[in-house]
Every structure is written in C-alpha cells, then in structure tokens.
Amino acid sequence: MHSLGFFTPLRWGQGWVAAALLCVGGWAHASVGLGIMAATEMDGPVTVYYPSTAPASPLTRGPFTLELAENGEPVRGNGRLIVISHGSGGGPWVHADLARALVEAGFTVAMPQHRADNSQDPSNPGPDSWAIRPQEVSRAIDTVGRDTRFAPLLSLDRVGVYGMSAGGHTALSMAGGRWSAAGFKRHCEAHLVDDFQSCVGLITRLTGGMLDGIKKWAALAVIRHRFGEEAMLSHEDPRVAAVVAGVPAAADFDMASLAKPRVPLGLVTAQQDRWLIPRFHSDRVRQVCTTCEHLADLPTAGHGALLSPLPPGLTGLVGDMLNDPPGFERSQMRGVDQTIAAFFVRHLSK
Image 1: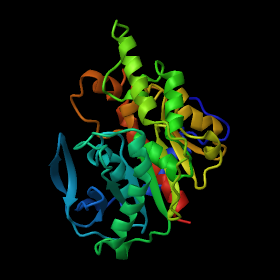
Image 2: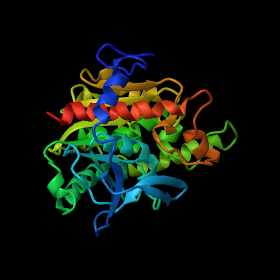
Image 3: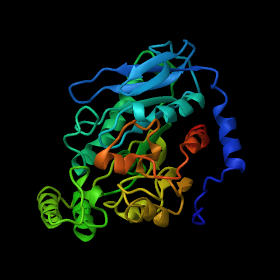
Image 4: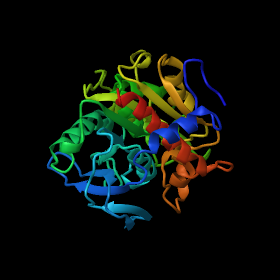
C-alpha cells in the first residue's frame, strides 16, 4: 500500500482498526436518530443524525431502507458536531453508513443540502457551487446551534467537517485551502482529455469517435466563458477544528495553501477513481501536505467507494464513474468509517 512518510496510512490488522473500534464503542448501544431541519429562503434542509434512546425501525428513503429512529428523542453523546458536505448531485442517504459510525462514536452529524448541486436539483455544479458550499456549512452549524433539541447537548467551539468529492473541495476550503475559478479553467485547458469528467461532469464523455473534437471545443468554450475569475477564494470558520477530505476535487487549489492546513486534515483516497483522476486531485494534496494524516488509501476503489450505501442499479456514464470496480471489497468501508470517526475523536476531544 502506497504512503508517504508524513502520512499515517490505514493498515488493516494492526493498531488502527483496534483504536477505531475502541473509540466508537461508547455510544454503540444508542439508536441513530434522524431529524430534518426545514429549508429557509437562503438554504436547503439540513438532515441530522444523532444518538437517541428511541427504538429504530426501517425507513425507506429513495432506494434505501435504513434502520433509524425518526424524530427520536436526542441524548447527549460526546457533545461534538460533524458536518458532512455531500458530493455533486448527492444527498444525506449516501453517507448514512459514515453517519452511523460517527453517531456510534458519540457525534451528532448534520448534512446541509447544497444549493443547485444536490439530488433534487443538480442544475449548477462545479465552481459556482464550490464558492458557496463553505458558507452553507457554516450556516448549517448555526442552524443546529439554534435548534432547541440539540443546542443544549452540543458544544460548537470545536466542530468537524467531512466532505467527499465536491464535498471534499468544501472540506479543503474549510481547512484553509485557497482556490480560484481561473485555476479550474487553467487545469481544464491543460488536462481536458486526461481529466475530462472533472471538467465537464456527467454531461458527456469522450469515446474516441468523430464527435470528440466538437465535445472538447464546446467544453473549453463554456469553461473559458464562465470561469475566468482570478480572485482567490477561501473560507475560515474558527469553530471548525478538524477536517477529513475524501476523494476531493482539488486541481484548482493553490497547493501552497494546503502545505500546512490551519487545522488537522485527514485524507481518504481511491486509486481507481475515474471521475477525479488522483494524480490531478487527491495525490497532489498528498504530495504537498506536510501535516496531513492519510487515513485510508484504497488501491482497488473507485470514486463511489465513499458513497455508503451506494445507490443500486446505476448505469451508463454515472454507473461507470460510481459503481465498484472488479476486485473491490466494499465490506472494508466499515473500517474506513470507523477510522474517520477515530480521527475526529482524537482531534475534537481536546
């Protein structure tokens, strides 16, 4: 398993898994509660997973059946909040397994719905969404802090943030990373063919056919028209004290800003990622970051490994980008989730 000297890799069968299991055991007897905080004029709804003594029962949400205590009475866990930033076109259910591991470790988990880049409204992904996502994370912390069910149970001076894919971009921003729309444009001008899905999303793909030239011309024309702004964007919330980025979109960051993140930063990488090619994204962060903890490097995993549960029946381009590659053992993701929880326990309990 590849690792660099300044990372702490996940080593199965050694101390990491045992430490993770010890950390998550304290609230494992509690049910996982589910609550929804209503949308506002500015923001979408915030889904909350939390420790509860109410009994769980099967709930159907989209294609998933989850064992949750809907609107169950919350109880105090470890007093800390984790905010999860979903990927493009994502939502709260595809991170339910991670949320469960975090709740078992005592955390309350909040998942804001990112505007115009979610499963109900995927109309405007990419840099426009990346610019507002960190603000949505901060407002989600505010929303939880105003809720009379949770405010008495939480201390919001040390909050964790986890993000996957586009949510990983959010996570890097919350850790102190600086990026620009022009940086995205320059990356796509230089690497459009090799990182095509990162630049255009799931609208189309290159097939080697006669239309590829038109696709590349059109993609660059749109990108150059929309994303020329040189202003560096950043977002600092002093309440955020630890961050984990999973398979993050990262090609547009000033890598110097991620050399020594302002807070502890954990990374989860997947070497068979075909949506965000690692050498342009996660591997660049790994190479430059001198203080990051490499929580897991999954050599046989694709981009969708961190969607857990993975939506069933994905076909076409989205299926090719998200379905598990041959040879990938999804059962290992339980251990990855526990390792992420252990990271937050270490850094937020200080």
